[in-house]
Amino acid sequence: MADTFNYRIDHHGSLIRPATLLTARAAGDAEALAEAELEAVKEVVAYQRRLRTTVVTDGDFPREDFRSAVFDGVSGFRRTDGETPDGLPRWVAESLPKANGPLLADWAGRLAELTVIAPKASLPSPAYLAATTFEPELAASGGPASARELGEALAEIIHAEIELLVSRGVRLIQLNNPLLLGHIAADPAAPGALSFEDALAVEALAVRLDERPEGVRIGVSPGWQAPAAVDRARAERLYGEVAADRWILPYDKGTAAELDLLRALPEDRDVCLGVVDATAPELEDLDTVMARIDAGAEIKDIEDMALAPSRGFADSAARPLLGAEDQRRKLVLVETLARYCWGNEF
Image (tube, helix red, strand yellow):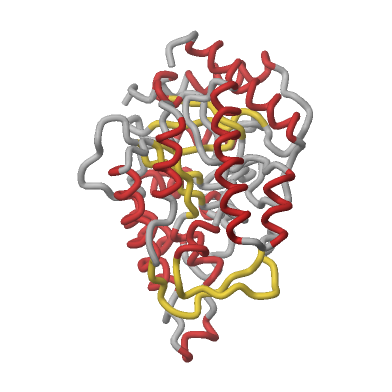
């Protein structure tokens, strides 16, 4: 594709929330929270501009976690007292979901007013939400009859939101599904509520676009860490059946599996390499990371690459993975690495 130069320096979208925003959210005053969110987004846009990123997000500042755009804007879900295996609040689908309005498009419009840098939007993928919120016991009382049915309904909502975001000027949209890489491991994860085949079908429904305006990229992040070993055939199915333009892949450990994920990628797809660990404060050695990028460039044309941290820094507002200064140092390193790779041609 080779026209991704505008998006070379990327990040997953979730940034560490300022204390003032967390305090406003805890206070429960909706009007004060809205003001705090807008002020915090303005500040985080300026922060990203100073870091010279080539995309700008709202940091997920108006949301509790990376799934909240859907849970806040779609009916049919109920929050429980439980937690998911990764420590997030557990939600269940009590009925087929219906969107109550735009999910991210309004905030994307505000971003476009704050900067000329391309706005980016990140959403949870429909297959991920279906896999984690489907409750078989609720089917008899009006809940979705299957995880596939739930996923397809969510895919239509996400697809409509993607089309709306594109119409509002967003050029890079990322769907996050931390479970997909488990499906393509040599020893695949148990299918759980949604099988691999169903997950592929659901994700494919969401990312389809009959027309893509120039520069638009729909990306999928299939997980935060590569499996111990990759099943090449299943990886090729994933890339082949989900027509995403860009795949955001973990690439911060230097493992053979990370290279295998890259080898399976079709020639006509872009890749964003997660080259720095967003969970560890220690700064990576620049030469070590560059050697990994060079190894990847022997497999994939470097003109079809971008660089990013391995995952979001605060997929949950209350549980940032690093401190604010560590986050800044990691993002600066990504920018430095990009300049080593492409000079100033962003």
